Image (cartoon, rainbow, N blue to C red):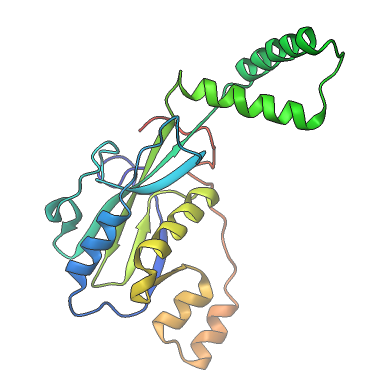
Length: 218
């Protein structure tokens, strides 16, 4: 779900920790260090997440003006994943098993041998395909100490939280998902107000974004 166009549907996270005095320079260095390194067939990783320019997942050389928009840090959180068509994997596994049987004269492959064959099949397939690319917009309001992440998917949020920790954890910054109790703490409610707050009944909203792993190319 994009921040620059379409419906403004997002999850909120509070930033815990104080920004250092030279935060713009330090944030910029950390962001460049954690810019996405696109997956290649030779990589051992099956999935990788990193920063890209907001609105353009293929722009990964990030400059100051790409990132800082007045008092906001705006980025894309891009994930590359190898997605193997199940039918193609099964067909190539059958072919490999037939070759194995012909060479060895055995009727069946062992569990370990099947696992090794599957790994070989996937390595070969990676050389004939491209990883699935998805990107989700990320907007950090520095003055508010709030991050807006334009997805409600649990897996997408987990990837973003891990990336934030790897990028900014050395500055003692972390993210806390918005929830009634965390919001009440930030508002500084009195005991009476907190009691009334706790008695509020939550309302359920229909989710706008599902948590599909088969990400559409951004």
